[in-house]
Image 1 (cartoon, rainbow, N blue to C red):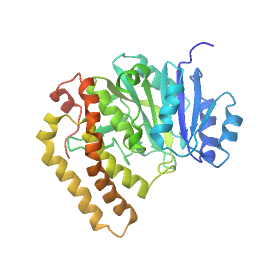
Image 2: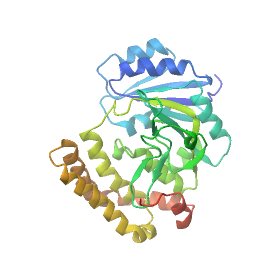
Image 3: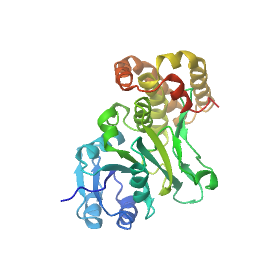
Length: 317
């Protein structure tokens, strides 16, 4: 069998109702040279039946329980045979030209390691969820263009810090060099962590506006869970990847940002998500010594200077 242009990996957990929208959209892709791998995190619904009905030739990888997004992605990546690897959330609907646009952008420049899609809200399709991810010098990542109306500003391919893994494509050689997703992060910011390692290694990430995907945000996880993991993982990603020389230069901004999150959570203490954010920050602080050994990975990968890395980051505000 000839090599597929791309492997599409879809992490899934009790998402049969989402797959009934996502999988038919893949059948409509203009680029049909792909293999599909659905990695299931121990679902108890009829996800397997939906996959076999919609795309019988797809691989369905059944895990014993819900290990989280990072583990599911890695299980798919290690099985992938395609020339490029695309990740797609189950709660999405990609337009017909999505995969072709991602593959075309990767093929346009061997220095590009990843490509970010234009993620738009499923129910308000004129609003952006992500046009690539940014990373501020104060250690706070975010979605470029989030909640803004789609328009000319987001119709040009531009370089971004990392790609939202809910709909992105990656060069296999990049994974081979910088590694897969860090499963210790579980979910949330695991794509930022991967992007940080790729930046240190000198890979470029591009936003591709023609790769349009509609996303039901928070369909697979939100609220307390998201607040806990973002509170924790902002700190762990910094501890793992932020070069020491730049940490010293920006420590005041980093502390200010973390105190800002803490004070905001305290103001909303009655809300479960606010309390979860504080628990996440505490888990991040206590987890820093545990992940410090992983800093050697970034140090060994590093191919760019402090100034080049700063140029790829956003200001604190």
